[in-house]
Picture: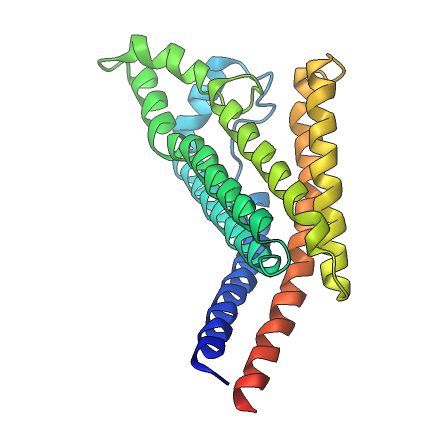
Length: 248
């Protein structure tokens, strides 16, 4: 094995190991999400005063829930980088574009999630206590509502999902391979990419009511979880192959 080949194998092993553990973290954070509410019950229709009271009463669990979402987002990015690396030999331009899209999605997702961890608890506390700045805090908290799909906050979140759909469309075809795990991941990503674009058109055409947007998006995002599960098996198998080659 030449030095160049050895370095390439080590790099590939490291990237697939990142993808494997990132996929495991995606699954773990998905379980944690079940036990960490991200907003007051009936968030879309909840009264503003009820939201403020809930945020103050559940400050720690709210912050923990959104920190978990940050970890989930970064973990998805790790899986997607491994997928981009998988197609780099056959489709280098698509791989580069896909990696760039993932980086943009990290920024799009990180901004609102950091706001949830940092800004929103402070706003709720300021409003409840009537401290200096309460007059500014009240309309700002309304603007940063985490459940209303047309708030400034959720707009960043849905931008992140749209970037995921662009990534999916870029990698779906070149990812399709002989391994069953690659086929499953490729098809899941491709279907997600197409569905999200169709949902966007339906939204613009007034076919999806604002109250239903979250359900549609999260339903489509289930396809991403299928792709992640498939990549767990592919990354594990690939890492073992690299180990076998190193021993031989």
